Length: 309
Image (tube, rainbow, N blue to C red; front, side, top):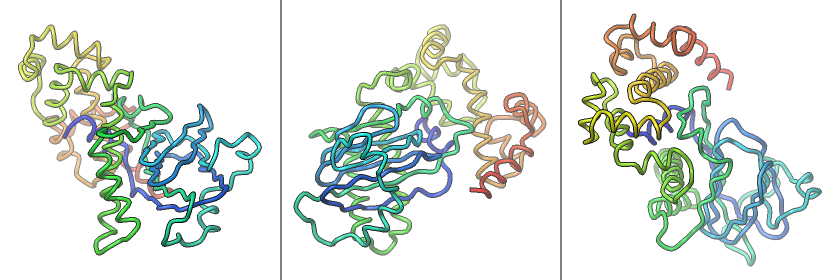
């Protein structure tokens, strides 16, 4: 896999959900803080997003906004004042009160895709942790073509679901999340991880580690993969990523193992091999040192949390 795919897979749980919404006139609805990530795509018209912390964001047709940390927010037809925000209708009740979507557009209507992803934040890759409270991806000609294509496909599936929609929609939502993160990293955003992904040395080393986690990596072998000296790799990687290559490898092996313990019933021996440990004992020792609990206990605890969701 690669860094973005692994970072998303490590935190994503359950199935994403979404609604295609049509609304006109004066309206204001609130989405409570959520243990996951929310998003909105404006298909037609315009509206405003007012996060619980931060500045209001004006959204126009084709704009995409991601709230990767589940920040509570209001969406409204105008930049509502404090009193209006306090009276905003909870989103679920707002959907119920509106009833079925109208089949035809009306003057001044706003059409949106609203959705959310369930995330497990107990083991978050720093790429995901670094995402800002609100990621606004404005619609610009020629910008983010893959994201635009995913939005179009998702809007069509939600508007006129056909055979296989129950598989197509969740898959498109997963694709949308990847494209939103990729677009954020590619738009010149300040921050460590957009810089990391744009650096040829650090990116090449990360690509090698994530594509073959179980390989017997050494600093020399990784430097050869990146096409630089060992000293150059150590300096560039440590400066940009925040830890030396082998320390990052150990951390990610164990973090990925935690994901496997949460999401699969694979035996410890199989998980140990997948993440580069020669025996279950060596893996268990490293896991306990990193997380303060045994792999078996971690699996039982995460299973309990999932059952209570």
